[in-house]
Amino acid sequence: MRQPVIVGNWKMHKTIRESIHFVEQLKPLIQSASCDIIVSPPFTSLSAASKATLDTQIKIGAQDLYWENSGAFTGEISPQMALEAGCRYVILGHSERRIIFGETSQSVSKKAAAAIAAGLIPIICLGEKEKERQSGKTHDVIGMQFRQSLASLTPEIVSHIILAYEPVWAIGTGMTATPQIAQEVHSYLRQLTIEMFNRSASDNVRLLYGGSVKPENISSLMVEKDIDGVLVGGASLKVESFAKIINFEIR
Ligand code: PEP
Image (cartoon, rainbow, N blue to C red; front, top):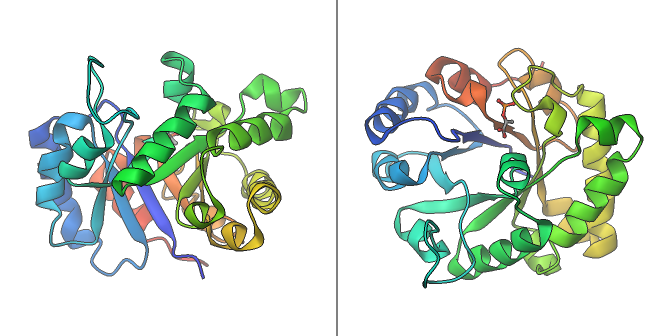
């Protein structure tokens, strides 16, 4: 039985003060939630958000990291630094990092291995662009990203990580993939996991959908058998909408 998980990716939003204010407001609204809750603030807020959520079920995730422990890597942070700032998770290979900052699946694989070695759980993002979907290349693109991004992992490790299917055309556009489209790709991801790892890894790995998730569409997504949770951008920035998503009900 896979535990549902809701992740909020704040991207480059919220100062330290705003992050603390947000989690303080969120806490009383999610006390009866039955899913794992992860919030990913910018680096500067990790430590403060983690202290503010110590006594709660909210866990903190970084939005990226570098694979080395230390060194001359200006602007980067190491897995150990994220861990000490209170992170338990790290988002890797988000499409904004891939498209704007040139992140490759090869670097995602190195980052995932380093994150795991430090005791962090990676949330690895994959997703096709609109043109790739329109030209029937979705499975090719997802398959390639999957094989390369998970190249450094073992079946045992894969059982404990999180994958997020985030079609690029659905991120921040208001165009959510239909539950059927998301389920189809998630089912393909389970198949890929059997082929590259084993059935146990495929049964246990948690698969999130991300792309314009809102309170209005969360239930219809969560009803699908291979969707174990969601990665939320825009709607995670407002306490009311994020709390409604966390408190989703399957109707
Ligand atoms: C995201 O950035 O991961 C995301 C899914 O954004 P949004 O929910 O705003 O589409």
